Length: 110
Image 1 (cartoon, rainbow, N blue to C red):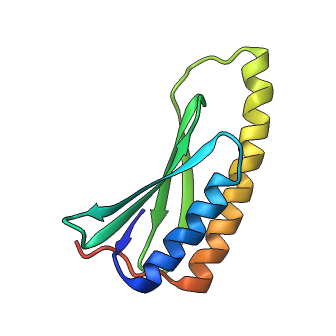
Image 2: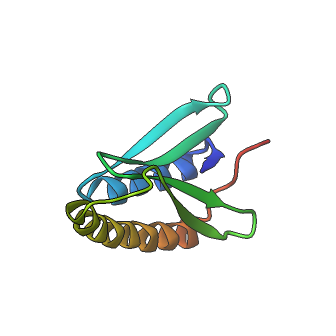
């Protein structure tokens, strides 16, 4: 998700980073210099996961997180790992949804 680089959005970004980084296997990827420093880009990075996470924030304060699989087949161990990763992702989604409601981040400028 890309939001304006404002003091209020910086607080939101810090809280979002804490939420994402507390879950094993996930890391917040932040770029405060996006669009020549006018915007902040926030992504949910995965560590050794068979999927990527895509965030979406709309002008109506609608927040959604989507998963795109990078593998076609999973073995039994990967399926078990996926179960725990998806539970972690559910927690991340829930926390980020509440942060969006609380801070109402201002969207990017383009």
